[in-house]
Amino acid sequence: MTRIDAFSTDPLAGAKAPPVTHAQFAIGDVVRHRLFEFRGVIFDVDPVFANSEEWYQAIPEDIRPSKDQPYYHLLAENADSSYVAYVSQQNLVPDDSDEPVNHPAIAGIFDAYADGRYRLRREHRH
Image 1 (tube, helix red, strand yellow):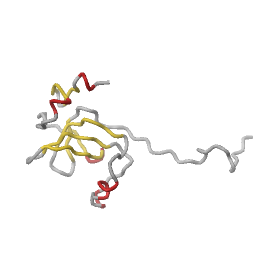
Image 2 (cartoon, rainbow, N blue to C red; image 1 turned 120 degrees about the horizontal axis):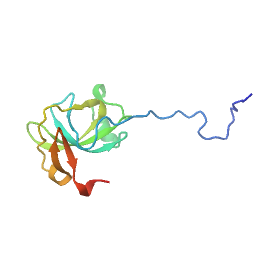
Image 3 (cartoon, rainbow, N blue to C red; image 1 turned 90 degrees about the vertical axis):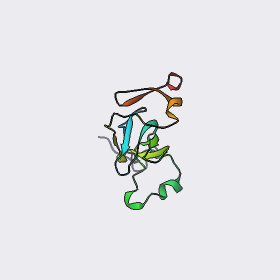
Image 4 (spheres, rainbow, N blue to C red; image 1 turned 180 degrees about the vertical axis):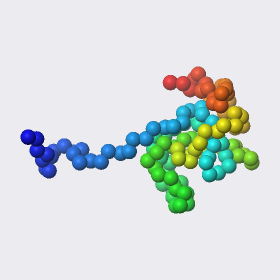
């Protein structure tokens, strides 16, 4: 019979495992925000929140997303401008417009747009 010792020397004994999250989107995907009127192309992915606490606290509490999910860096656009956005996975949906994103930094990162997504330039591929 095996007995679990309450005074185990294993530092991970009884530790709660962090939630496992998987990115639903990839670099080059064109997405849109589910609440706000902007869309963009993903150029980087953080497996969990990796921005400042000040940035996070500035989000109104009633719509503040969990930190334990992927966050995406977007070359974003709305009707007025282009900019870089940082968005939680729960707030993104695929963009089905089949229109390219109009952002001045796209040409430096991506080299082609086809079938609703961008292809990463060769020098940025691993």
